[in-house]
Image (cartoon, rainbow, N blue to C red; front, top):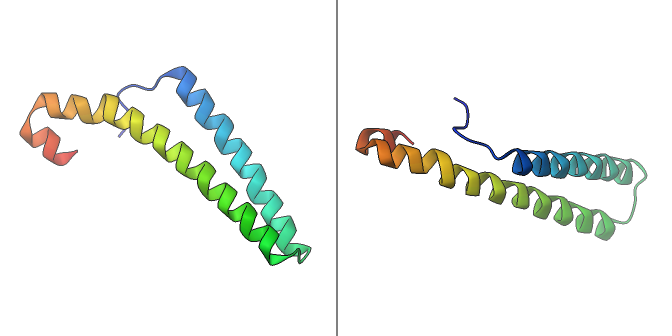
Length: 82
């Protein structure tokens, strides 16, 4: 199933965020390999988690604005399936 509507600017912003997160994950792997101080690694893990939550919030906002709204307008069966 595909999204009903995705704002191109939001999509681009989410892709930039995900690429940044990907870099953070690689940094975390390097920190673990180098046996860096646990507190520093934990701080970076928290940063990645917050970045992922941000992407999730944007995806949820889009979902509610387009997908869920359309399903609700189409009726009970479609809304229930959503």
